[in-house]
Length: 486
Image (cartoon, rainbow, N blue to C red; front, side, top):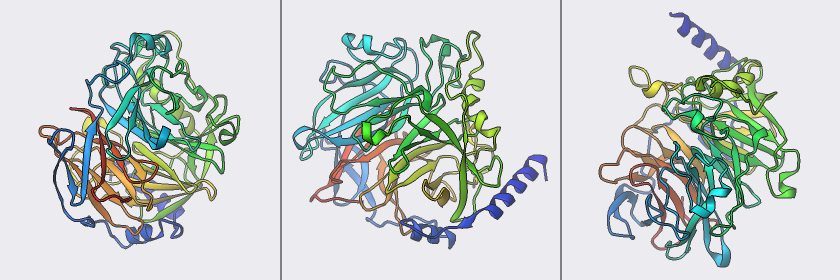
């Protein structure tokens, strides 16, 4: 046994001893199913078949019978405010709009230093005049699912990956980068010093803003400068939970406590405290390894003294910068995860996916030097009980292949967007432990492009989801004869 394998064996044994099965709550059936070894996929809505897009008749999705869809918001299209629609559509959420309509705020995970997104009039509002990420707002008719209008609602940010909706009706957009003038190029070769400002923050976006009405972009610096993914707010504890996708390195789960009661003031204020999750009794628990089915851990939190590091002139190596916040937690025994990405709050519980969590079923190392060898985990965190429970771990890519963004349906099903290297699906994990396919990417030549940003309209009758790269567009999916679904 190599020294690395010996360390992993000891770590896994310690975790198994520390964990206990927790079969209670809305995920009881799912955890029990996992503990019995259940992990296969079922066609609970029937097989998927090719469906034509109502926009232009082109086949882009496979869906169960009885479902249809329309696409809009395509990269390169001119929006109603005159700006060009950016690509790399990612996380998003839907909100109630005026007169019964729907407003969807959509991230653009744009990396690089081309022109700032938006019209020339928007440039003064950009957080960084040399980065071109941000968000767009889509205004949708709830009956026809056609686009009423769309416009820029945040600009001058970078690599806006996921984020999360807040219960007072706003969207927190998260940057999955720490690029800035104090750091060198990141792992993609994007040149950090080309940025005029530091990145790696959260930004609050109000879907009520109309075309050109968004204010100057302001980061929440105290919530941390790291490779953000998703966020989910628990109003009972006034804490914002955050996932980190550090890709090549171990990642953490964070909680941010704002200096004010966010529900009361109806905004997320800067100036609060940042902490990182730790497993009680297991320093630096490697939760990205294969885990016992249905295991639950007691957790606590360690403080992050410097949530917003500045590396001065240099520039400092980007690999150092992207680990700077997390290393503060790991030095105090914080738990290590393999690429935590999507997160969602429901009934006081925080659900999140780890894209590379678990054990690999294939030979060799994962691509691109990622940290983690698995094909995905789904966890639930209970802030009140201070517990963390594994509710699903993929045994291989044929079952679930690298879950990324997630959301929950009105029926409590967990909707997972795949980011796999082969054909990609939207998959649904039920509270009873069944996993089934809901949508497949059938775009010719782009079948391997990931789904992203699945979310439901406020009435639960429409699912919105993106294809991120390639054509870069958004779908509205609904039952042909009406009603909520999933």
